[in-house]
Image (cartoon, rainbow, N blue to C red; front, side, top):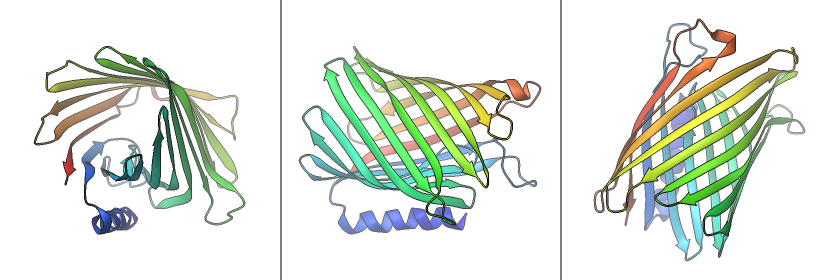
Length: 257
């Protein structure tokens, strides 16, 4: 917990020194995913995101993103916009409980036509014990369809985590939908993630998981946005008789001038 608070304070101080106009988002989380504490069957997390415009096409992003199960992604990066291109590059920390690995984060978006964009993301981190060895490799690639009053994202995510002498691989299909009505203050989001998990110690055994979730957001022109989120494991082949695993959250987003 001390590590999480230190990272949070670092980002807050860093941005308060240079912030003149920025977009700020804060969200609290609760979930009952597995953890390493036998006395507690739940997790509590905090996410925040800052985005400040430095010049017309140059932004600074600083984020602490909670991913359930006491997992976080923290990064500070520069973002550049040039016509149809958006490029982001910066330093990152992949965090799980008290273990963290530093690395690099790259994002690249390209608007192919008015209704279609290509979106890619690459995270690579290194072991703090031996920097010559990778710790996390996470690559995402997909398309965003800009429909009338809706955005739909279809993507594939491959993630590999090194743990001591073995690794765990994740193959994930992603569906995200955000829909809205012009002039109406509510936005609705739906998502579904279907993925398999492979442990290198037993490569012939696969765990298949289906997760689904949603988001309801109230957008006001002067007082920011307020939202609630939720997700749950609908199916897990390796734990069909287990309790329902879920996460919920609530947050706000607004501009500071």
